[in-house]
Length: 116
Length: 112
Image 1 (cartoon, helix red, strand yellow):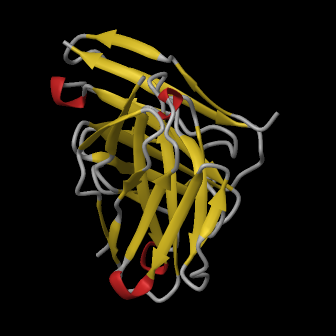
Image 2 (tube, rainbow over the protein chains, first blue to last red):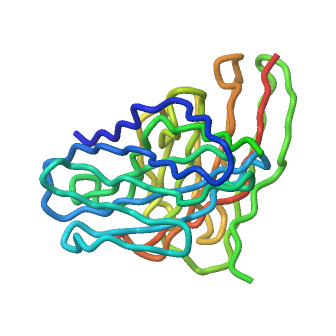
């Protein structure tokens, strides 16, 4: 069965600090997809990134970067020079062959608070 | 504009009073799902549909019903809501099994 663990329930930082959100996943499949979503205080889910299991290249998008390591089953998310607008709940999620990719299995979420 | 539209956005009801949360997508997607979000648990899938008249249970289907009579609509029905169904609900759609899921804006339900 699939499982996604975000061990950090809450993180609090001061603006301009770098912060890393951890995500560890479990799946028996060799083909799977990993995602990060952001949920700002307004409540909607904002898609940030999708990565398939065959692409282990790290990705950078502006202040955001993602580190995918199959050897440790981790897909960590780093925000560089955090800003108050980054305050949100962040979810890591997985879809795989066992569920025919029809379901996203989410982690518990990490509440990030960035103080001015 | 590509959209998944849920209505209502907010709903307060009482135990046992049947309600329906509507979900509609304008992208001609085949796959649609319902999730509920609870603190400390993330989002969990309630039901999903792979096509018209094809639906299946997700992880937490008890107390919910769905129907898929048209491709664009996937309503979530609570026949007899209970307080433990107080939650934030999301509808999602995608064009294929391996494609990105688009989420609606969410429906915040309180059952008193």
